[in-house]
Amino acid sequence: MKILIIGSTGGTGQQLVKQALEKNNIVTAFARKPSKLKIEHYNLKILKGDVFDIDSLAEAINEQDVVISSLGHKRFLLPNKILSQGTKNIIDVMGKNNVKRFICISSLGIGDSIGRMGLYYTLFVIPVILHFYFWDKGKQEKIIRKSNLDWTIVRPGALNNRKAKGNYKHGKNIGNFIWTVSISRSDVANFILDQLTDKTYINDTPGICW
Image (tube, rainbow, N blue to C red):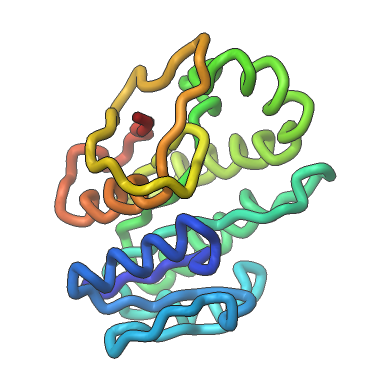
């Protein structure tokens, strides 16, 4: 498949690029700072761009089979609309280019999964440290759900860089109301790439954790 990965220089984004190439896909990595992506492959094209630059988005999205968003940022202490507005731009350009399949990484603790990251995240991390970030993620999810795309919103637990286990739980009612749940970025990437050929979670919001 022809896959566009937005947010390709982040931890999960790099795992997506690496694993998508290993599965013989044709990958376009979209990044504000392409030099951060230390991967070279004959099936990899790296494009410099920004989700607020419609022209660069149009160049990247044109003729893709699927768009995967691992969009994130570190400006979580102040209100912003980077995730929600950036995702709206992606969806708008996908519509104009007739690209239908969209997979976006969100998080447990949003929408009908509120509380499922465990007490530490529910009572401290999300309301105190990541309040604005999760507020914008919530808006991002609403924008995706209202779109006409074949979308999947993947909600992982707390992300880490441990090795893939290949054995994880996914679906509805995933997580824990007491203990913090986690998942490796490599396992999340594996699950997302499985969705390219599995229609189980189209227009759904599966959680994923160990």
